[in-house]
Image 1 (cartoon, rainbow, N blue to C red):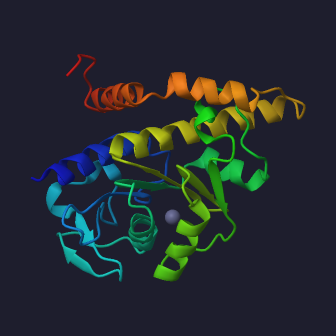
Image 2: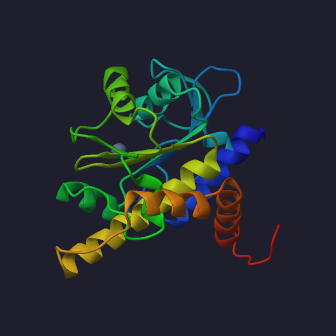
Image 3: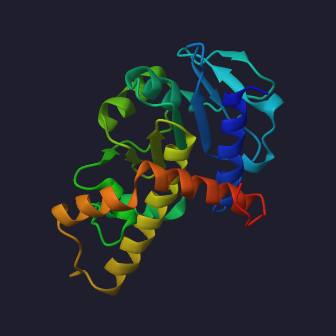
Length: 232
Ligand SMILES: [Zn+2]
């Protein structure tokens, strides 16, 4: 098994632990080290059911070049973002419930919690169509809306998070779902809620989401899904 396969399988196992009743939907990818496209989770199975032989290599046209599974039809999300963002090594797409609910409110993301500091100011893009992203043109439109941000909400659909590697992309996805949940809880209690200033949020982001902390959080997520609390 290659490093990119083991990274992607690790991402799938962690995301399977956060399945949130999304059953077989949602997908993750890592950039192919030979520049042929993206290695992705395959369709028709849950994240945690992935094995190395079921991962698929998909190119920019949506053609499956290798692997034993069936391609998710939304592969252009991954291939077009990777094409437009050389800094992106991994992409996560989910339909987790709090993100979908939050997106439908139209509220801007507010830094109520540490989690949300990843997404402010103006670090959470929005894509207005609720259609599935099945064509390169739609994938390009998502990539253009994302610009250089770490995450995008797809209206009435879900979210996409990106990172240099699976650690960044998965931790960002987990934090976005949590930030959305906290803001929904807060807004339900009172529409007149308080939150950090941009300056405070940026300082907190720099303290809370250091590369070292993201790697530690990723290692913890892996240990948790593997059922062990011992450090590796
Ligand atoms: Zn989707």
